[in-house]
Length: 445
Image (cartoon, rainbow, N blue to C red; front, side, top):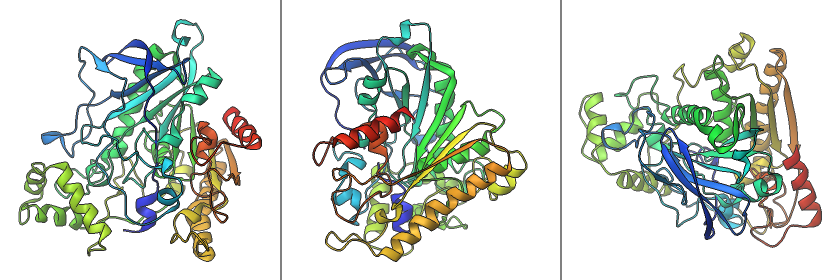
């Protein structure tokens, strides 16, 4: 497992302020009680709404199913982040901008299939329904959550009053991508199936929050952007959404693949006394081990450099992930909707060995910038053009000292996100006038 594969990508959100107004909306999961706060009084926040039944016990490593309606849902605090760990390798995000990471005091647990909604507080009583952005965080299919500080849209919604943002939690690591022999071959990319069910929930329920179910856009970063493109091909006959936005990632990116013989799952199972069993019995046995213990074991294996390297990521299942995306694009098996695809000028700075004084190995950084991000984006754009699909491209080169504190950092992987979310000034000093102007223009676009 490479640094790249586990860092694609590490995201963040802050603690909510004291609620000043409680707000109730009805959903298929039950009535949800959200709030507005003093910092953004014109934003209704609904945090941690469950869209699926908890994937625990016998439901661990099964596809998600819709949440059964309950009497009341407290949506004033974030739900659990899915089980994960941060690698102990120094990076830009750990040393300079931890605001890209899930906060250390966040709750984590298997009961994590929830989403959060930010909407103009009073708009649900008006006639014109609002467009909706559905956000998929990055994290290399290993880390991430909807409570990442740099990715909190509250101030953006407060300013615009013209759109809604929904952020989705989905399973990662061994819980989302187990690649176990005892699972059905088309039910091994569970995190991607989580995303689809979340979009079905949004389609059915967003109107009660003032959103327009006919104006949904799926938007993601890094592995979240890869997920957006996977979704584009997997559900082209019923995409639900009307547009796609991919920040630094498309289906053409190739991460390190998990073992084709399912040995990584078996290695973990054997450690917990579940070895030398049939494929199905192996899965059933490991369902009785706590998620915390499993993650702790994988974390220790990774951080100590143990062999084998335990990689748990997407697999080609011909349901959610396919082997040849050019072929599918040219054969018309992608959604007939427009897309925005973008990268940053120094993506690779985030993936090389961190050296505060001298910066990264430039050749290695350029290798990642070009080979992992720019070239796959170009390939995706070419395929879309050949298929007659509208595509917009951007290249971000902003270099602002509160987002990029070191002289060598520049526009690294993810540095454009605080500009879009309007969070550039939450750490490392206030934003400059130019920075605020650029941020506002990016938001408007």
